[in-house]
Image (cartoon, rainbow, N blue to C red; front, side):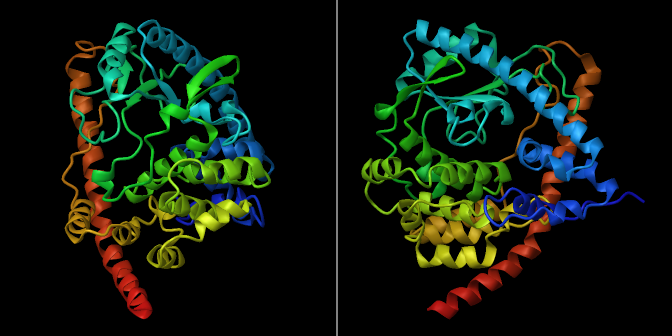
Length: 418
């Protein structure tokens, strides 16, 4: 009978990667037969490379060989990603198109010590609305085309753009030959979908800067605005139920590394909207709760400005998002609802999360040029998508009973404070 990996494995990984009072006891207790399953799971959650850098000695020799290979292949992928970026940057600049690089290697050195040690599958660019059409045309001139013809599920960026190179997925997240995708973003936060504003992001582009990474000049957000955007990105994924452990770990890495940087935090506090920073408070609290990172006093005061409802959510469900893949839940819904003031918007969000109507689309071997692969590939794609949709439907169905239970806990806790 096939062994099942302990569903608590995400918590073992989080404890092992903590910056203070960490413990690798959970990883050390794993049976020899569980290592392969664990690394397959951490690959999917994009946190394997952090384990390879910080926790390699915990793993048996066979697993260490896998981790070393993952780092080597990812470094080669990084080189290919840089080449793809430089080609795109030249095309956009030649067309007079203003753009900014978001996330990925643009976050070095604050969110990771080496960009070669970060999993990155795509290039995220931001363009103001007046440049969107020209940016898409410039990418088309390089051979990129929309992954699909609709923008379903893309509330902040144009449809994903890919090259039909013929590359096929073989299960290796770090395949050096895996071609990068491109996402062209046109806003930093979707207040209509999330139901509340996230502060002033209008000045991000105006305060941008040129930063050099491995000899590449990157037009990107300032470090101050980059932190705000990282918090927005994390909270958006949290509220939509698809948060990765890596999202939180990278923010914790920033908070740990900047804890003694008085000049940065004074500048951060005095830049942009001076209203309470709700999104940043939630993101900082999650990073500190999971990874025990140090906090500069400004960051700590920001975290302490959370409303009472959000504070209660953390006391009840702080680690629920980490366990979402192993113990399906939608506990983040209660946090989301307490952040939204309009009852009608709360109702709309609840219905959307409990009974999602949007049909997630996946395409097997999307890089295969149109017209190639024949009937066999068509059949395989239909079966692959059917399997994906059935698994997603089962996931949503499995969350219903836990959602009722957590709703009762949430209601009792809320009543106790009224």
